[in-house]
Image 1 (cartoon, rainbow, N blue to C red):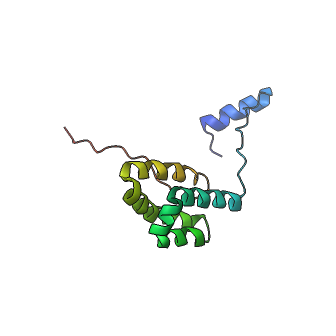
Image 2 (spheres, one colour; image 1 turned 60 degrees about the vertical axis):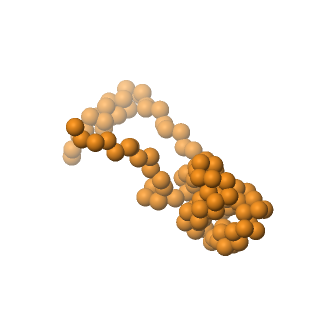
Image 3 (cartoon, rainbow, N blue to C red; image 1 turned 90 degrees about the vertical axis):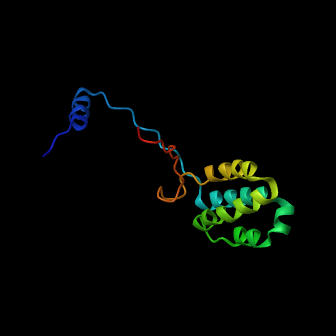
Length: 121
């Protein structure tokens, strides 16, 4: 049996009666409810003008079957918003929408913050 510092420390604390504080578990919202919230936010950002100007994006958002489908609609939504409001405003809107996906998708699908590439010296 292999002992690590963490398990040894935990074992000693347990023997002394000092239990490590449990990490709070964040209750997950119902996936269907969260999906509908994301869908509503996407449609709200598109607005009435956008839904008329970009009916294909509107339909894709409306008929996306699950949270994964909505995730893949983001690029087309970004293009439509950038055309209507400019790229800066579109990025701000999409950032707010992307935050709604937190905890709903595998980490491999979510955006990561990237560090700027710096030249080697």
